[in-house]
Length: 625
Image (cartoon, rainbow, N blue to C red; front, side):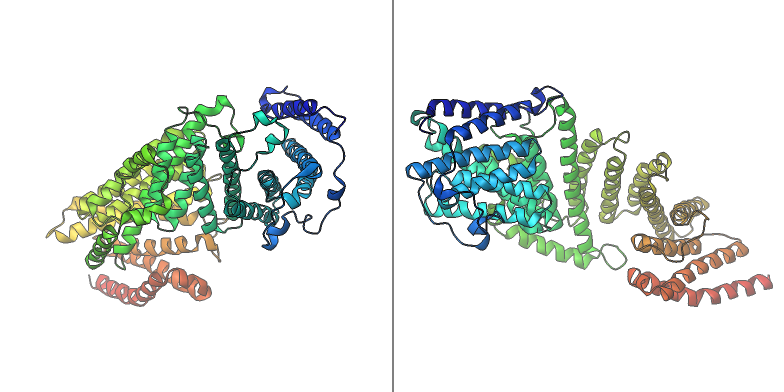
């Protein structure tokens, strides 16, 4: 190295960095990696100019280097050894080049070569890894190896690298704490070295990347609590250091809300979604210093479509929030037949009062995003929607209207042409919002209208969908439409029971709803038949409960048909008995089915016992007349 002018080495290194940053789409179409290969050639020249590896840091592998995570994988802390003197300085500079060669090979999809260079980098820095000069570079090399092994689906190896980086960062901050040297500074003259503030910013960004990748690894390993914790920490740090891409940040926050919704942590879910709205609103309005790892990979021309897609995805997360919060309240307040239980409603109100009396800031402190104006903007969105389970119709209606607003927003992008499955899921969620709102409604006529709205939005989908390609979706909608008609019929019967003398119009309406419910339950059941139109002897686990419920409801529907013709009534009772018997017989042959429909099975057994006697009375009556 003494023979090589230091200025030439620095110049070649800086030129290599500049070429490395050239975006791929700026290269010739037939040579997408042209700039990367040019950068690699310069890095190899710098490596040659630096000379061979120092004698006391040869390239013989050490036992734990092959695993790649060093002492931290064993839970052992690093010892502080400063990178001082020409030998150490030479090792560190060579490690910087090995690091950039490793990243370069990974960028050109040469993973094995990339791994080799990154492991060499770690080996050269091994004893100095806790030092002010080397800690950032060491963590970055381990982070890149973590990503590499993750892409190979060797998740435990990736985890070891990334957890080692986290441990080293924490040890450095605890024992030393001063902003460490950025890897680029090893090839800068003294007067061009970075200020402390810039060093700190870059080091914190390296650690944020570490947490970001750990979140993904834990998600892949199905360690969902840990994944959520690291995702939340990443998002929080990105805001604190102004190192984020608004659209990407917003979709990550909205996705995190779904974890909190599933855990019934509605305050935290609301906070994530509110923050997502506010940050998404910054799209295109602010510059971000964040690098490509956190940017969208879409080309600039795709941004308008991507913008609308992300907006629709965030809207869908809001729909799930409103729907789940309402459904959770319904489960808390319904009796064993699915109607409102006033005692349970009082219990929920008492629990709500207790939740309100708690110090909200204590619960929010751990999940707060942003400070100052940003925090105020997020709070303003939060105030528009409750995190408490609704206890009456008015509170449920507020959530319903919010959910419906986001349904319309989601449907702007997820249209039936081009996004069939997504569009149908949004419509099904819209239907579910009406269904759960009906639970809170006390006026039976208004409840009927809500179910009618559900049918109006779902029935056209069955007409439009090809059952050959969308069999499962068709089944779902058929079952849901059938159940909506079934609920309407029950409500109309309840209304008729309150009248002294129901007129022919209401009787006709009940029978019409009954017929429609039967039609769609039968369509659902027919979809289970084989190509020879034979109903399966063994029903698949995925459709077992809905198939049994459909059979049970068909049996009940035939028993509810209103007719003045005794012969017709006898036929309906016979058909009803046939379906009840099917349920009882099937559960005897397949005991696992009995666990799926315990309540319906008991009623079916009862009807199998009672209906023959009732039918015999009908026959006697008919013979006498």
